[in-house]
Length: 159
Image 1 (cartoon, rainbow, N blue to C red):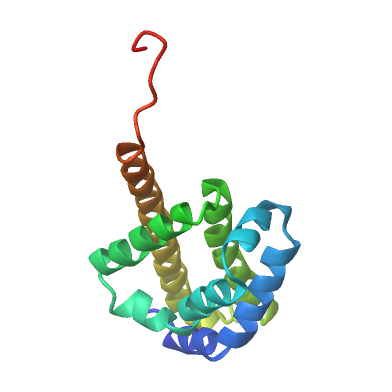
Image 2 (tube, rainbow, N blue to C red):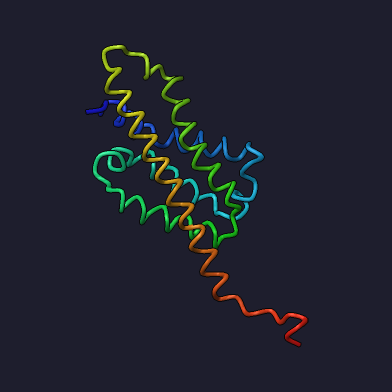
């Protein structure tokens, strides 16, 4: 079993992590549209929820629950007009910021817990990869729905 201590530590620092990630998003040129189109409180709440409930996401959530959450989130961001690349950047930055926090706090250096930490890292990778995939599914679904409900534009031949 991976290091529950690390997960609990991440959850306990969810506020600090969410604030730091929000700062990273605000200073990144790769997330300017995201910040303009998604209300700050919604974005911060979403980030906080990931960090605060990390244990649930890694230990108890099934792939279908991740699929449901992130497909819906992908659809929401597409409807908000967030460019897909910026949405994926936000997920990537969420993961990278977490790694940086763990390393800066010296939490990945204890040799005794190395196997547990490696399993934690593997599970984190799997979670974020699935979140990214299902978010992309949501984006594509929203695009197909929008295209299907767009009025037909007359062509020159049809006039």
